[in-house]
Image (tube, rainbow, N blue to C red; front, side):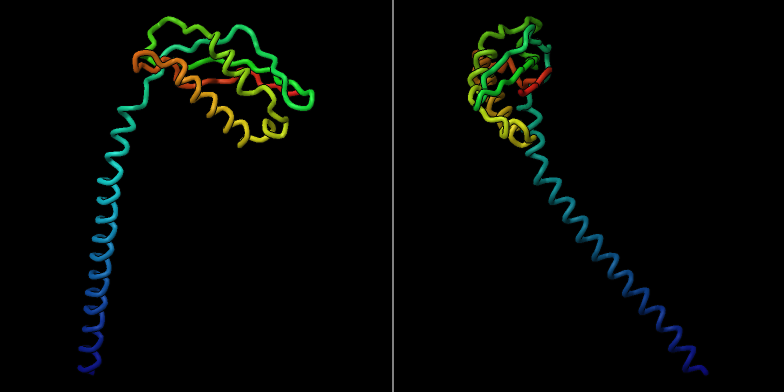
Length: 153
């Protein structure tokens, strides 16, 4: 009986040692991975925060545009521009934004505009052109466009 008690007493000690080793290794691996991710991603978020413009006023277009699409269809488009804080409190002139929107959407097919992916792709192209057009002296005046109406026929 003494041998059975000794064997039973030793078994839990080995289990506890093995459990402690597994826990310690897990903490080292998780801690190292977390620290590595933190230091690798820290530079990206810091530079992104510096480059991201701060939102300013919103300038809404007074009238919606009607644009000719492919195959005799039309797009009625209303929008507003999100200006940056650097642009100040004065609304930008929307004449160039109207022209860029007309150029971007004229001749597009209903199929392109009927999917979210298609609309997003075209919008990204338009936003890039707007940012370029409304950048003066390395100051971005516009950072995004919001559609207030988007109707195809």
